[in-house]
Image 1: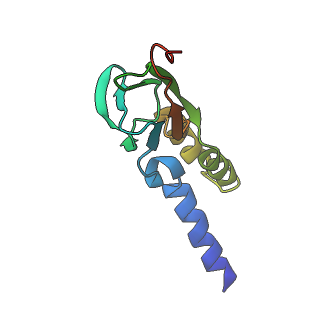
Image 2 (image 1 turned 60 degrees about the horizontal axis):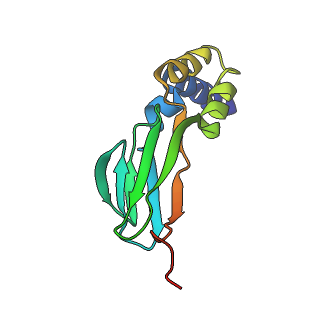
Length: 132
């Protein structure tokens, strides 16, 4: 009784187990600022105003710049880093015959990667300082 269930699970993981490639949802990054309504530019292009959530391609770096009139701009770098849960699932798949295929697919496609930080909070400084 247990054997067919285990074989089915093994076949599923071996044939369709490129976990990140098959099951990964969009990679979203949230942008927040104080004060709110700051313009967010991604690699120099306007993306919206805070608070904001964007889907980003996970296998590259981005520069997120926050701008608001009367405040100094601030830039945050968003990096692509391996998503631990995908790597772990693919490595577990190595225990199954043919399990190296999902590991190779995810590694080659870069689908292991996720943008980091996934949530950005920026406090903008007033431009020009305070008058005495």
